[in-house]
Image (cartoon, rainbow, N blue to C red; front, side, top):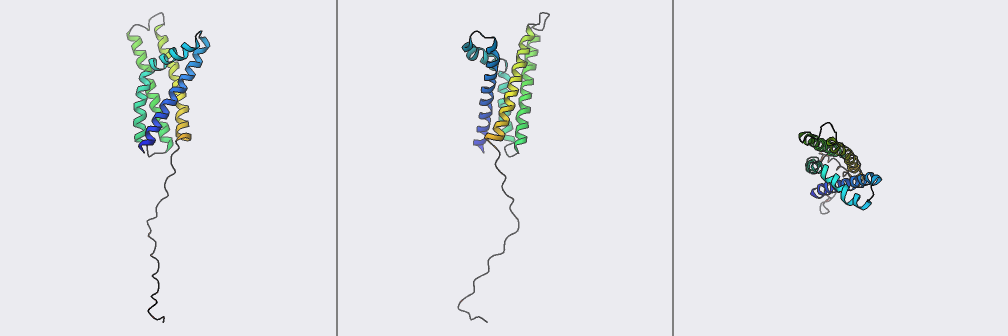
Length: 170
């Protein structure tokens, strides 16, 4: 059971990060003059810089959810993982907005809130990637094992004892 939990958490995290990285890089390549710099430098800055708190918190919540719901149906695990991703993203974007407002970035020029807008858009990409990956991992890659058949409480009668050949038949 421990192997399945570790495999589930690692697969979900790695595949979500790879898918979000690919989508964010694809979106950024439309305006980029340096494709290599965009994929290798700018995309990880957005993914891990703006969404680093969400990824760290989601990792923790993913581990807890996988342990708590290890014996439940796939629907419970899917719902738990997606709700935990929403909570992590909400806290991340809320923290970005508070930090921006506290540093005076929400002023009349509006440039400070651009960081929050980029964080929200990146969070939407991460949410989409997480949705796809959680569904694929829970339903296709690691489907739940079939439940064991119910054991009957009735005990079968012992087999009849063979007749003793030494006694004459009546």
